[in-house]
Length: 497
Image 1 (tube, rainbow, N blue to C red):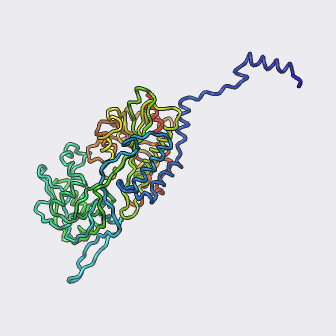
Image 2 (image 1 turned 45 degrees about the vertical axis):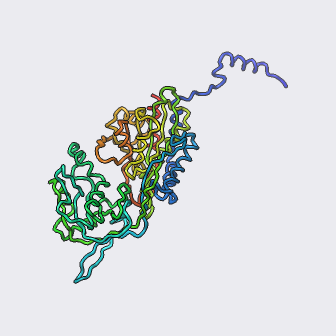
Image 3 (image 1 turned 45 degrees about the horizontal axis):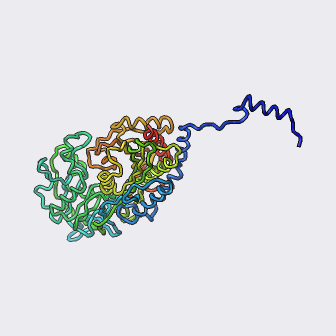
């Protein structure tokens, strides 16, 4: 082999005089670039697949306590295991158990109005399932036919000089009841607190039962609602405007005007409607039910800061079968999908969080936000060591986001606003959260424990709530991707400050 002496000398001199020029050096990847790579690994296609999975019939609408919910919890756990997220539940598992009675609803419900027709004859107007009525998800099984008595909000409050049952014989009758109370928590917060205990569904059915009522028509949607109390021999059905108008027809009153009069005068407007109604439900109560939260965590790398934590979470449950499948795509398979997207990105990111991050998947949000309440009374991390809780509830429908409590916690919100302005560029509406009404979000319980919160939801498109139309077809996958990427970047900023 012949050696080109001139070429060899040239190469040697080049290496000596221009070493960095002769041998290209590997570029150093900045911390931000590494974070951005992890951020962009979050895919709308994957998140949408999560939603479709959770809406499948095998999970039966994910009512907490049922085998369908338990199967969905195990599905979440399988991802935590795959990504190396550590268990933080009972006895080294990912599951945290808590008591959770539940009721199954079967096909066979009816709701109809008896209409007098000629002498000693009548017609029956049957109402449409889901469109005009829904069986109560905590109703006992049975049938009742009786006169309907309108009792406004169904309140007996002697200390407020307000009793909507006073002077009425409602024994073995059906009462027609409005939701909430005649006081607005936004307009009159101090006055509302006196009325707050009477705004709960549980109070309204118990007060009716205590007055000897056999059944209740609840002007609530109609929506599927397992957040109520099961009472033996008490039949509960949810109705909407059609039933309200039919019952009020011929009474000389109008439903909306009567309710408005209660609100303005703060005086009961109860009366016998003279209408005969039948409600029938077929159910099965399970007082022995057990619910589960799913808890995993990524331990912080800093020996001191790892003793502080950020919680990211959403509720896994929906309202089950009533008697048809209620898929719960937006509420709240979307929130779980975003949580999983963030969890995988954090678990695989080469930049490790200095503080610990807890991924908290709640059960029984739909049954009185019971899972989050139980967790806060039995926390994995001391509550006083939690920097913040980031919640997702209904984040799948629309092209805009709402950040509940952002105005309550501006320092926390600043991280998310900064990340959005720099990386995501979505319209996000920051709002104030008064948090004095009955708790409707898991985040409300955390705020009650003085833990800073942000609770995200999406808006800007048609969405459905607590019915069979909340399906994957209504979901906007891109909004979930943007929210997951935003939370990832903002949380990594918070955890490493």
